[in-house]
Image (tube, rainbow, N blue to C red; front, side, top):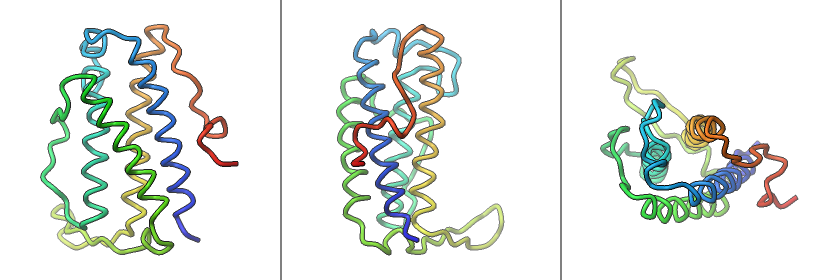
Length: 167
């Protein structure tokens, strides 16, 4: 069975959830978005930006087969406005990539040298795409937990309620 339908659905889900969180963040001040809240990347915006950073790295890796230089703590966008534009653009790219991929593209082998194991590991491309979606979800949950603590309604997160789903 092809991973393509799952990837397309997860891309739509990712886009929907990011749109919801961006709408919520639009109502918050820059000070609130940058406040050190004691979460893994400190602030809501830094956490959101970390997701974007990893998405870009994983997408580049799945296209080229090479891992680009990467610092998980690096801030790509230091303002909410710049982040929002980059997030919207990348979500469109992720969705388009998944929709336009051929039926076997997700199955292609992407070998990785593992220094820890001292050998080459072989993963299909879908494994890294799945990791991207998993990574997005667990860090978005850190953001939604903070919003909940603040008494901010961030909307529904259940997949069946996604208005971007075509059925």
